[in-house]
Image (spheres, rainbow, N blue to C red):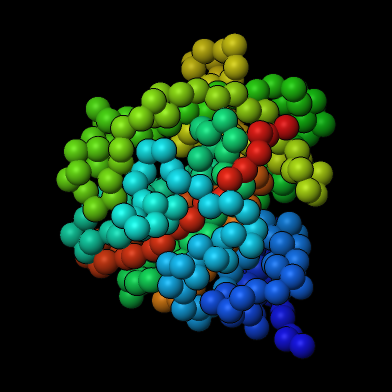
Length: 282
């Protein structure tokens, strides 16, 4: 029987798992172990992995159904894999804002599995924020006020074809977008989300995709949203992961935000990403 070990990265979020080869056909015990670690720590990490695209998809299918993004193009043969290839001379990056993946979907992504194929010699870390711990630390009055409020999520700002995303829609960047109505759709989700498996409550807004509170203007919403963003990313609610070639991160978008550091201009970075179909936030 294999011996697996989880080592927390921080008190509230993140753990490295040792003793598991993700390229193998994970048995039910291994899947159960990873799932429980994910529920406990929010994001789990693996070192020294070697995954083909098919193996990456096989791992993802152990935990859910891989989804095809309606805007960001996947690879030609496997559209569920988004290849984030940032050349050494590319100043722009992907995910350089705190966010929960695809929160603008009507059914936001359950989780994300990111595999490091090529990394820079320094830089390129990813930060993760524990939205459960952030909720728990709110005052009783703030919790009462937020319960029952919904916020509007959309890709219309982050993926605006007329803005910074324009080059990607025109095919001038390595990461390409395809235009669809999903760019402008708006979906309302609870500001406090209850995890369907653990029952834990988490703050569920993010600066990349949350526009405003439902039935409120942007200006009226901004002060409280800004406070929630600042509060949720306090150092005590975060961990920082330093990538190595062959590293894998698997995070739960239902209670975790993340931020990709863009501090490695002059070096190439290649990551393969799969997101899993989720459910309607409650």
